Length: 199
Image 1 (tube, rainbow, N blue to C red):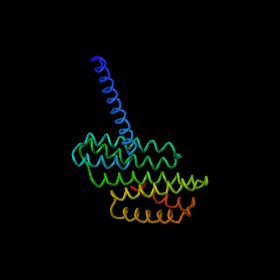
Image 2 (tube, one colour; image 1 turned 120 degrees about the vertical axis):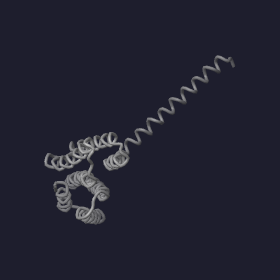
Image 3 (cartoon, rainbow, N blue to C red; image 1 turned 120 degrees about the horizontal axis):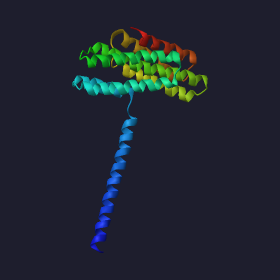
Image 4 (cartoon, rainbow, N blue to C red; image 1 turned 90 degrees about the vertical axis):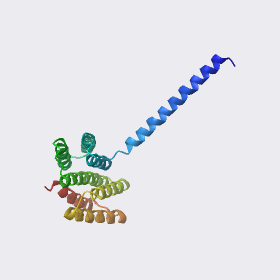
C-alpha cells in the first residue's frame, strides 16, 4: 500500500477518534447538567463559601435563583408570591456575600426556605394532578415534595426542623396509603407556605 495512502488513512482514523471523544464528552456534559438540582446548587454555594470561593458561590446562587424563577412559570400568581419570598432570601444571601458579611444562621434559613418553596411547588402541582385524575403523577409530585423537605432538614434546626419532620411523616403516610385528596395535600401545602412566609 502506498505510503501516502497509509498516511491519509491514519489521519482519517485520528480525526474520527477525536470526533468520537468530543461526542462522548458532550453527552457526559449534558448528563451532568441534567443532574443539576436546586439542592446541588445550594450545597455547592455553601461549600464555596466555606472555602472562601465567594465569587463562585455567587454564580451558584444565581443559577439557583434562575432555577426557582423557571418554576414560577408553571404556577399561579398566588403561589408565585411564595416562591418570590424564598428567592428574596437567596438574593439577600448574595448581597451578604458581596459585602463579605455572611451569617450562617441566615444562610441556612434562606436555603431551608428555598427547599421548602420547591416542595410547595410540587404540592401545588400535586393538587392539580389529583383534580385531573392523574393519580400516578400526583404520587410522583408528592414523593418529590418529601425529598425536597428532607433536603431542607439539613439546613434546619429547632422548631423548624420539628415542623419539617412532622410534615415529612404526614406526607410519607399519605403517599404510602395511596389515598390522596386535594384537601389533604392542600392542608400540608399551607403548612409549607407558612414556613416560607414566616419572618
